[in-house]
Length: 256
Image 1 (cartoon, rainbow, N blue to C red):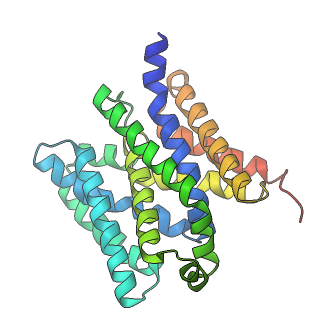
Image 2: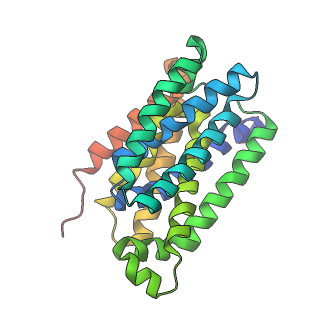
C-alpha cells in the first residue's frame, strides 16, 4: 500500500514543486497570460504522436521544446515582446493541434487523465523535476538580476540570452510534467495561481518560492485526494483548490 501511494503521489507532488518555482518567476516577469498560452504549444505534438501511434506525452514534450526554441530565436532576432510571440505561436499551435488530434484523445489532451503513470514515466518525470528544481535554485539570483536590468546582469557576467532560454526550457518541461494530470488547458493555471498567491503573502525571493511551492503542493494533494470520493477528474479539482486558496489568501495578504 505504501509503495502504491508513493507511486500515485510522487509525480504529482514533483509537478507541483516545479510549478511553484517556475511560476514565481513567470509572475515576476509578468508572463501570467503568456504562460497559460505557452502550454497549448504541446497540442500539435500530441496530435502527431497519436497519428504515428507513439506516446502522446513524447510528442507533447517535443512540440514544447521546439516551440520555446522558436520563441527564443524570434525574440532575440526581432526584439518583439515575448508575450506577442507566444500569442502567435499559441494560436497557430491550437489551430493545427485541434485538427490533428482525434476527438476522444483531444478531450484528454486538453484536460488530462487519471491513468497512473508507469514506472518508467515516474522515474523520467522525477528526473526532469530534479533538473528543473536544481536549475531554479541555482539560477534564482541571476534570474532576478536579469529581470531588474539585463544590462546590469550582463555587466555582472550573466549570459542573459542563454539564461532566458534555460528558464523557458524549465518552464516547458514543467508543463510537460503536468500534461498527464492537468492537460494543456489547466497546467498553466497551476504554474500561475500558487505563485500569484505567494506574491502578496511572502516577503523576499526565497519566501515567495517556498510559499508558492507550498500552495501548489497543497492544491495538488487536495485535488488528487478528493477526486476519488467526489468521482470527478483530479485536474479541475486541483485548479479549483488552487483558486480557493488564492481567494482565501486575499484576507491575509501582507500590508506594506
